[in-house]
Image 1 (cartoon, rainbow, N blue to C red):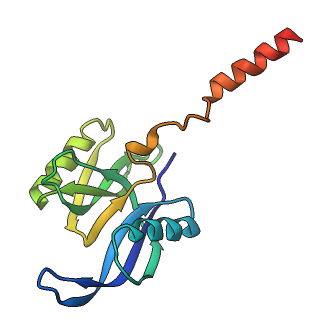
Image 2 (cartoon, rainbow, N blue to C red):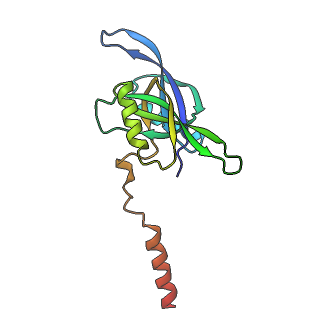
Image 3 (cartoon, helix red, strand yellow):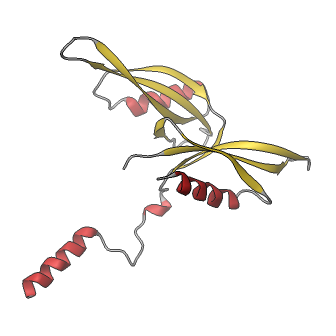
Length: 172
């Protein structure tokens, strides 16, 4: 399943460490099927983080196609990288490149390049990293987290259901 990434900006009043209130507009990236679901998901995520009123000031489809997470807890920033996939046209013999955008977790830009290159090491097609820039994303919410991947007890795998149907037909 391909990810559909949405960029959401949320405005609210934040209380600083010194007790002062400050209006902020923070950016988040989340995976959702539609704008409606993206709005619902960002509202759900913000309810656990923000005390008080907030509103979504912007919601738009992102051009990010891949997410490169990191296991290192020091990689707490998000960098956007443009990767050009190089393809040769067999008829004309000319090379053409197609840009794809990656979001990479890293502590700094050098580490972002390192994490991205590690992620791209399995590519069999030629590519070039065109750019890496810092982003303002406070957090990223993939569609499924590790905890959510467990199947609820009342669900059965499709193969199991198909096998049960076959057994019932055989008994008839």
